[in-house]
Length: 104
Image 1 (cartoon, rainbow, N blue to C red):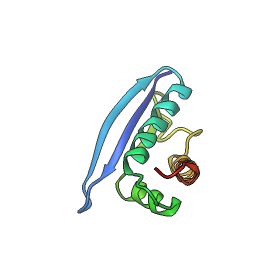
Image 2: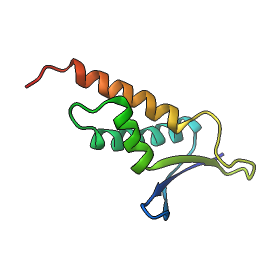
Image 3: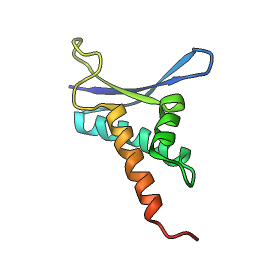
């Protein structure tokens, strides 16, 4: 089975853009690719002093949302990956790590 990862980006004004992120032989690889898309966005969007809520708001507003599909015609978005839950957890990890880093 092949898994396809596509990213949905909402532009201001209601327009959306979809791009193919990749094709993967395993669900695990597709999930890792989806996580990487979110991680890259959050790393670029995070600013010093940002709260978890602030960072998550940036993801909700401007982040690319990865969706995983399989090549069997029965799936719209496969189970096993929730991009909102993953992004929220990563926001917590990134903001907690930033709080523990020495100022400098």
